[in-house]
Length: 533
Image 1 (spheres, one colour):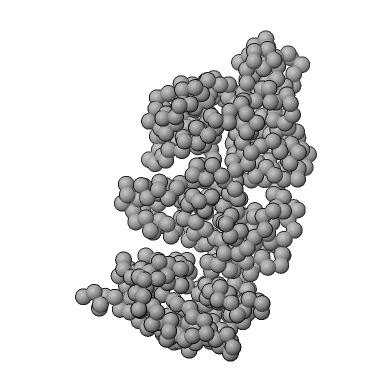
Image 2: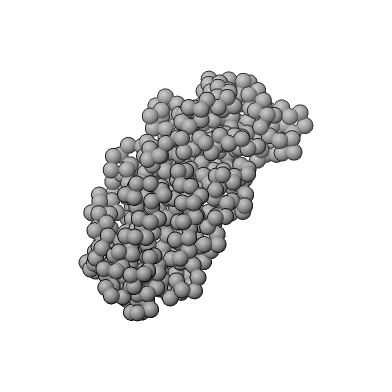
């Protein structure tokens, strides 16, 4: 048993000892199935605090012959798999965390030599008189050991991209690291001594400088998670179970921390969910592990349409994105699509494969964006925020004329001429117009099932404002009338969707006339407390 070669299972035991552990060992069934095949080279990238290290530690605890983990796994999902005993603690495992190695080495420049020399030394201790003294690389030693004993290795690398992400790492340092990875994984010889390779980090592999080095890896990312989707974060069923156990309202957790749709799997940030279960306090947890400085240099880049896209997303509007040309290198970013794709990998944005759009996933991340833009004093956002505050005030005062005028003005400014006479465009403009409401309300819910139909927009106040602010139920009409919109809200009983909300509800009907390009509005108040007494 060593630090890097055949480590023990103590790191994974820490996860099992924690207040909350959600069983993700089912992933091992898939990995067992691809062992010793051309799909045994795996890179799973995911954002900070999405369980990268716990997964890496689980693989080590399960496969490493440096420990006995049968008792540890006997109550987990993998124990019910036919492959459980076949692979349990049977293999030589090499595991290292590049970020930790970089800190212990003292600098990016010293990191590759640090990793190589320490692994080489441990391999020589584990296999005495097998590796010639002339061998200077860890992968060279693995090749000699395999040739002499037939041993094949499992390599697990955590934070594999730390040197790629580090701004202090020079081109020479990155080239040395890439060459090290190439020696470990690429070519005919590594297929002899590598049984399984599992890399995890924030960024995907496909990048100009690493493409030729690691193009034999299967990648599972925030853009394309495939079978890894339910193992990247907490699933909706897992969050529901935790909410029941800790007696926390699931709908509140969903509003705050939901938003990542991978394949058909709704995924929640594990760090945030665990924190809210333990502390029973809804606030930003995951984003506090980083800073707004990580966002601002990206969204502040001078690319056409980037700031408008951020404003739209802050308002709850999904934005189209083309991910196909992303090269994973900020120095080579060419347009807003590169920036938005990078933010998807960082976890600040969520990508929909079906619609090919991107959005801010939840209230937690939206607050991080707001904090970033406020500190940099975006003039465009400040102006929109002020106007939106006035619109919200007019809505709450039931000043229908002012509401219609302000929405008309914003419709003219934010909707391109080709899309102006478009109902979808009006809906997007409405969410932008009510950006100021986000301080007091959750992101608007669109097409919410309600009564006998679907409500166009529903704004529900956050818990701390629920006693002061009414819910907003907004219906849009096209070439009809605001009165028709209000009548539809009442006749189809849309307020039924808010039966658990005890406060007042404002019914807002907005109509757009295609010929005159005029908007009109009608507002009525539904006082729920008086109706229910």
